[in-house]
Length: 164
Image (spheres, rainbow, N blue to C red):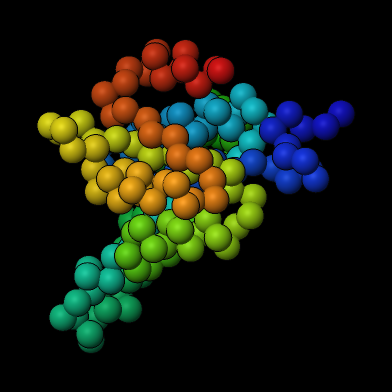
């Protein structure tokens, strides 16, 4: 029996979601996990370390980079445990370093199984957040669709819309 989330050729669809310190990240994670569970897909979680974090700290850059990775892995484990326990999804973690938009585009290019980019929209004022703003401008030239999940969407509503 073929997997329900498979593309032609048998390639599984991955939902790429960005792990950062924003509140809207939570709804994007939930949506990606729910959709992947319902469509037989997978979740890839991308976290990007900004090189500015190390600027001016040449002597301790490697230590700071290692600490950033540990922090990311601990944050990832919280989401991964929820995805495994509640949705039966075992997410994959990818950590890249550089400009966030460039690294997201590079990850999409590097992994042909990624089928959808899931972003959380910010909740302050009329600003959806820098990633949503920048990637929306480029959306016409992206090789995959973007799903933007409102940061204020309730858990119940999120679960209802992710069933479709």
